[in-house]
Length: 483
Figure 1 (tube, one colour):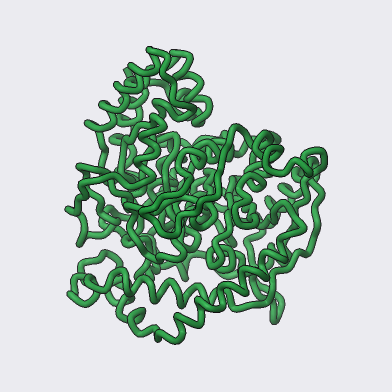
Figure 2 (tube, one colour):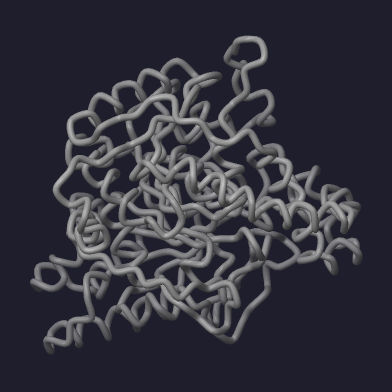
């Protein structure tokens, strides 16, 4: 029997509690999500492969263990999906790209290993933009599985490059998923689909077994229905790993945002949070996004002191990030580019974009790497007075799937000389954590989102802000209507 939508839309914490209390069977839960994936996944462009045999095997193991009182924790028996750049033994790992659609690995990625150890159940490999967008795609149809579609309005994109995970979580095809971000690929699709997406600090989560786009900027993180769920999943996947030279040793534990915040910063436990509001954060954004952001600030004032006009240092964050990503992408996919198989990619611009990246000069790449250290120090100093800073996650709602991104929405006028806040480039360049959570709806019934960004390894603080915001609002509980 397929479980009801009321069950399938539960968050990770609620499902874990139901499983532990024997109100829900792990096998029945896995079978229900598999059926929903097979029914809705292809239409949303969200599904590459269901891992049915593995899922039922892991669910049966979880059922036996829970029945015997051998409880592994809050993810025990909870199904999930993995972006299809994560290796899963015995199943294709396509990287969203036609040249790799038959690629298989004989091992699990570190994240998949750790979720298995936590008792979670892998039910699907989820769609993504080909090669995580590394070749410079400019429209939604940039995957051999077709464009991802947000379940809120399927004429619009689910966002990239974690397109499948975002759509799957929003449509309750899975209760959580693992995405990746090099430059916006967790927080942007989370905004497009109205889910909560956490980009961890660079190095917080091992990338062993994950496709490399940019070795010094790639990050893996959870996409969930709630910020609290993101904390639970991050606790399961974070930690050192000798197989990833960049994996950090800094510990991360999570029971709940408030508990974690008190344990990590006891000197701040008795005071209101201090949240900085980025200067000019609403310049150039759609009016509905600006209005929803202002409404969110009113909610934040109920539990935090807001400091306006926080300014990032005036440094070339975007230029440095573009140089690093381009050079590292060209190296990662050198064989694909030089063999000419890049011509098999779906998006026409992806078939030649890699050639331009091979022209990045070594001296420019090294200069960008040298600048990264001083930039990180400058950004950290700017954020140090605050628990986190807040801004809209995106300038616009999602884009139509049938036209280039540049033609999606008319630009919002800005004052002469005004420049958008370079938060995406800055945060990803220096590896800062951020969490995007839904905060309303804009044009065409599409979700809007707010982004909390913190200092390196301060996930507990951005989670505390996001969890409290969601305690006082219900945007994360809204459901799209699926055909």
